[in-house]
Length: 164
Image (tube, rainbow, N blue to C red; front, side):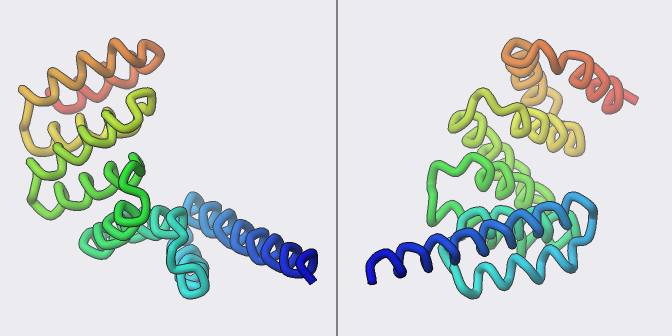
């Protein structure tokens, strides 16, 4: 009996993982509607699935639904306070809604949680550039150049973009 229960749990987990993979693939292909449907199915059966909240937040963000994406990030953070991805997403969402200081603080939190991950540094610089925050950008730009020398060309292109 215990073996059957373990097999059933494993099968449920495998099905869940397959749906998450499919949703991630669909989102990366720009098929946000189908990705969202799959993610909502996952969350209906597994309301504590952090990866589903993260992916749903991504989908909603790229559809311009920033407050809904923010809610997904908040749920993810509630379940896993150290989730750098969710802090990064939350920062982007609130910055897009005009709360730039809060957004930058959350992006800094993501950097602190996962200092070897380039994305929050890049997003911090994007938010600064979009909001004419050169002073804050200079500090993070120097740090990003130091931590990610392989990204120097991309960083230089970003700087040139915002100087135009």
